[in-house]
Length: 162
Image 1 (cartoon, helix red, strand yellow):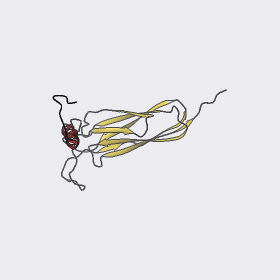
Image 2: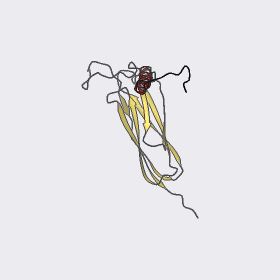
Image 3: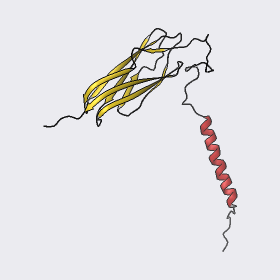
């Protein structure tokens, strides 16, 4: 039995057409990336040696390690890491990431002028933690080197029940 108006298509032609559609979608999505940091904001020397004449920001922390000491499981504690822009250009904190979901950070996203100070507040939640805890916070900036690692420590004890 024949049906009027049917279309006959070669199977290989069908798969080639599907492949071309998928490829074109991938290419269009990759070229429209608007979620990137402008190279004007994160300005670093173009070579590993750098241009010694180029004005660069520099970040200097008053401390890079904080020890909370003894904590009882479930406590939330915070500390502040203070820093100064000791360079000659605006300092930008691009990203502050923590090594664990139990640690959160808060910081200013505004550029810090040379000579000005800034701070990064870190909160550690000891819920479901036990024993010695060492967590890292990676600060990504427009300095050379681009990252600085901060560290928090704590000794978490379980609460005693009577």
